[in-house]
Length: 282
Ligand code: NAP
Image (tube, rainbow, N blue to C red; front, side, top):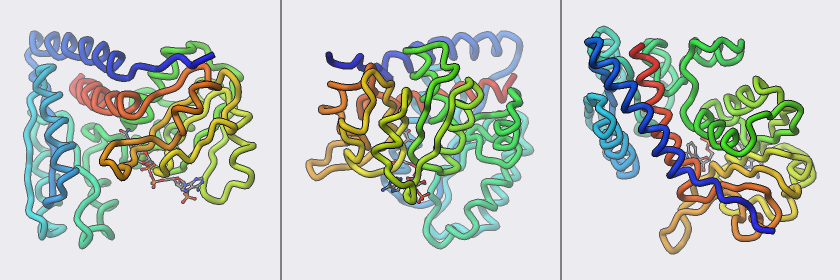
């Protein structure tokens, strides 16, 4: 039997519709929700991502501001921009588009930590990471794991006791994803590049989440019959098309439900960025 395809585009559109209503309600109460994006350098992919985020803001009525800094911007210039936005009451969310140019890679984390936690819509500051770890619900949760959780819950509301395996342990995705699954009473395994018998570990998963960045790494025989499979990977293949970390064509014959790439997790990331901006404005 073929798996149910989890339609991230449709679920993201429903999420955005609700956000647009929340933005309008805040406007009625006198608050114009605002997001500021800091874009440093000339990376074409970052420019496309920022453009998409700004368009998405406009569509739901969030006022967006783009702060562009040159490829050779200094630490102090970015710091000054962050401080200015931290102090600006019309800005509710601040996003520092990553990665920063190579010459800033050593200070990237320091700069991220300068964002006021209450405006940290990527959920990357120590305060927000700590709140997630402690199970406090007033923090801002990283967008992609938050969106992945909405997709999982669109298939199965009660996750209690399920075996969940997350492949990847980044601060941006793997670790927060594991925390969210733990909060829903899953038994969580975080796998990574040193995991032994990765195929065997994955085969135990009722919920399998792959966030590695390796094209079609997860094969059909790694997938448990009926599992929910969430493919976070974005890999550009030879023909220029995008492909995930899961061998979708094969795995869909085994899984109970599976996200496609593109059209699965990706659209949810931007929807959750908007949701975080509204949460920050409340
Ligand atoms: P990352 O920081 O590079 O982390 C990759 C993780 O994969 C690491 O924990 C690494 O393990 C693990 N890994 C690497 N090779 C492995 C292997 N052979 N077996 C098992 N684990 C392995 O990447 P990320 O930022 O988490 O992103 C992961 C993927 O998700 C990328 O393709 C990225 O483009 C995509 N992504 C998509 C969205 C979206 O909106 N859809 C958002 C964020 C990320 P070690 O820690 O041991 O090195």
